[in-house]
Length: 89
Ligand SMILES: [Zn+2]
Image (cartoon, rainbow, N blue to C red):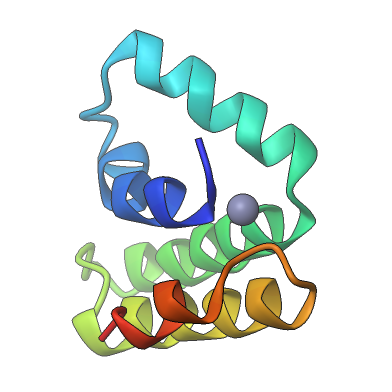
């Protein structure tokens, strides 16, 4: 699993709607990728805030921002080819 695949599964991961086999891959990726670990941490905190406000859903704008941020970081660290960033929008 790479960062792109991980981000595609991020919503499922937080929804708890993820296949156990995929969950294992997600956890493995988190163990090796600091960028995605930060994204998960930030998203979890955000969800907690929204839960406190009794609004559960993660705003699309926020998840897009997170995605863009992690893509940019991965690109800078050379983990992703430029093409992967350009096609993400
Ligand atoms: Zn990653």
